[in-house]
Image (cartoon, one colour):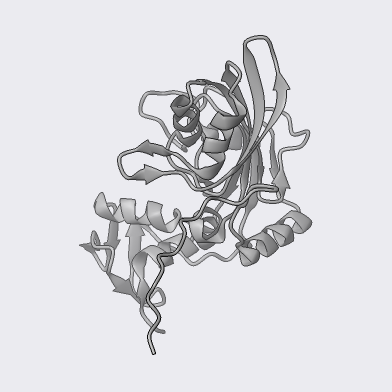
Length: 268
């Protein structure tokens, strides 16, 4: 069999996403034929090489992959373990009697709630998270104050949220205006750390609450807080179509500003 990158083999076996597999390797938790494999470029033969993670031999998956939707509550870590003993997504999975070794696809902040996808298919998880697919994530966001139309237009076009960090164009619409706060729907196709909080801080409207309502075509709907359910065949098929389409997000009725091309002298 042809050699493959070790992180790809680990991801396909459901150990973690490719990025997570690389972190395991760097931490010295993966061995190949008894030797620590801590370089991302290592290639292996999954049929012949003895690959271990934390001392346990990697086995080729024999069962069909698991794809789950979870309604993560606030005050919960998007992780399978926490050294500080805080509640984690693993608590929800145990309560739902999910016995397969699965992991979250992406993350939601500790104080955010909403839809989280969980799987044991590392390659699928990488596709969901990779920015080249432009998979839209939809959020219901409550901010302090009343952002002006001009301020929201700035966010729609993209803003700087840190040194060398600029957000991509996104969609934002106002849902409800209250006395001292505003509810908005925000659609992003990227997932920088604390992105929503940093975006709205730039226009002076601190975020008070975040709820993810959809990942691509998969919607939170009427899922109860803490509920875990399998994705339906229709949802999986719709996700595949969305990933294959991979079209960039554009504001409805608006286009992001572009710089005018420099004029060039004609040549004969």
